Image 1 (cartoon, rainbow, N blue to C red):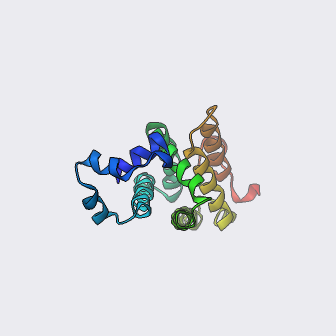
Image 2 (image 1 turned 120 degrees about the vertical axis):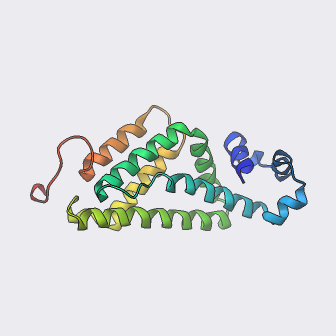
Image 3 (image 1 turned 180 degrees about the horizontal axis):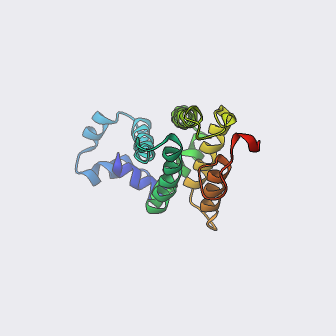
Length: 183
C-alpha cells in the first residue's frame, strides 16, 4: 500500500502500476493480488493510509478548544512536512469525479472526517469554549473544506492564512476571543 501511495504521489494515477508496486516491495504480482485483489482495493488502502495520517494529528488531551486548535495546526504541519500527502489527496479527489467506486470511498472518508470535526465542535460548545452556533454541520463542513483545501499542493502560501483566519473565526486562535455576548 505504501508503495502504491508513493507511486500516486510521484506519478499520479496514470503512473500507478501494480507490477511495479509488487516489485518495489519484493513480492510477485500474485501475492500482491492476494492482499489487494483489485487495483481499487489497493487504492482503498491508499485512502485509508492517507486518513490515518490525518487521524494521527488528533490529540486527546487539553480542553476541546485546545484539541481543535491543535488539530488544525497539526494538519497544517503535516501537509508542510509530507507534501506527498497533498499530491495523493489531490489525485484521489480528481479521480473520484470520474470513478464511482472511488467517489464512494472518498465520500465515506469525508463523512468520517466531518463527524470527527463535528464531535470536537460539540464538545467545545458543551464545555463553554465556543459559541453555541459553532455546533453545526455547516461549521464542520467549513472546517473540513478548509482542511481539504490546505491539503492540496499549494501555490502562494495562502493555506496558513486560511487556517489562522479559521482559528480566529472559531475563537480558538490568536487575536480577540469572541464571547456569547459579542454575537
